[in-house]
Image (cartoon, rainbow, N blue to C red; front, side):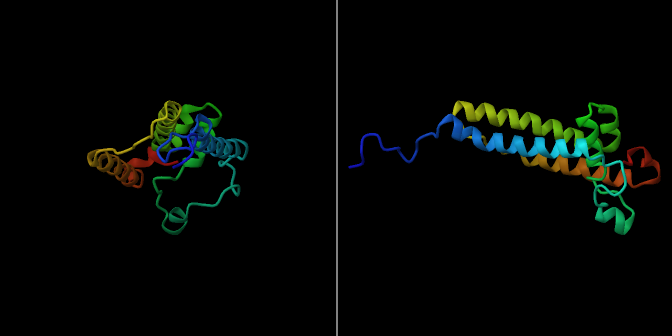
Length: 144
């Protein structure tokens, strides 16, 4: 017979343990944004060139993402959207999902992300359309 105070295999970990992963992720993202805020991606030579852009001359969906993060870190939302609008949406989605994760962790509930396939297909289609459009002659306004 196990001791009376032995943790059960289904016990919910303590609050600090539940918040460790969200806190660690927030620390890593904050450090990355702080680095990008300090080291300007608009200056040549600070970051490597996108391999797709270098090899083909085409912009990938991530091109301009560092410039966008730099602009967000400096509070310039217009420049961030100009550099890479989907990246800005990604930063906002991260903030919302991270907050939901923390609320679930505080309440002792697991976070279950199970979006319907239609949501994933729609997001993928929009990202593909953005990538194609920014590489057309009339999509120049989407260049980073």
